[in-house]
Image (cartoon, helix red, strand yellow):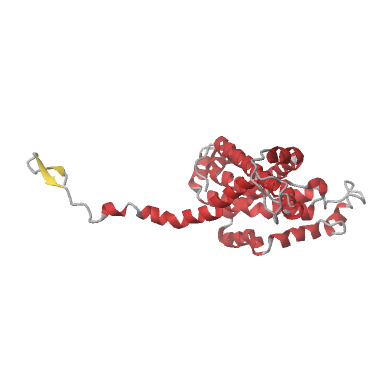
Length: 306
């Protein structure tokens, strides 16, 4: 038992015993760990163990097969072979995903700003319009773009009326089609974090900037944009990461010249059956994205990603 110092009405110190600790309080140190156990178990089973198995399969001997099994020979050459053979697909995937992320930011920021600060009673309806594509299969949405951009579609018919497109020009099976599909499919991942961040913005700050005679453009870059940076960081990460590993858009909207690394990994796993090289490519892609994300978060200078 410890004692605490109190002051009497005459001003002199007196000592009073401290309250007894609650019975069993020292025995409840395990409660936080018990609360973390379900989530931790989920991560171990569905994340840590698969990552460990993937890391191990990168070092298998490619001479094996799924029927006969693979031998762990610590063959680091799987990484060098995969990177040297498919370096173009790596670069193309990063370029396409970066362009699509920038396009999503350019399109999504004004939309999120309008929903958060200008929509009024239409806010919920506009949010539903943003989320509505998720009620349709990712594959179906991409196939719809294949129909829209087809050579006999109304988009190409309209473009051929301009002097910029000839009768043999096309949009489908081009980098534009792949990037357009990526932008469309991952746009909600950009809009929703931006909306959450802009929704926290105090309108009085914008009024104060106006009272100080700040031009609306200057007010945006000095007040709105810095305060919404957590949403920008979260949105760009949630768009760039899945876009870099996507293969559906390149498969349905592209051509052999627009193949992304996701298409190579899918082909190595399911068609060629070269599991070690496919695992090495997957691990390389994951490690590369992790490094880029770490650098981006460090450069952005924000600790909050909401």
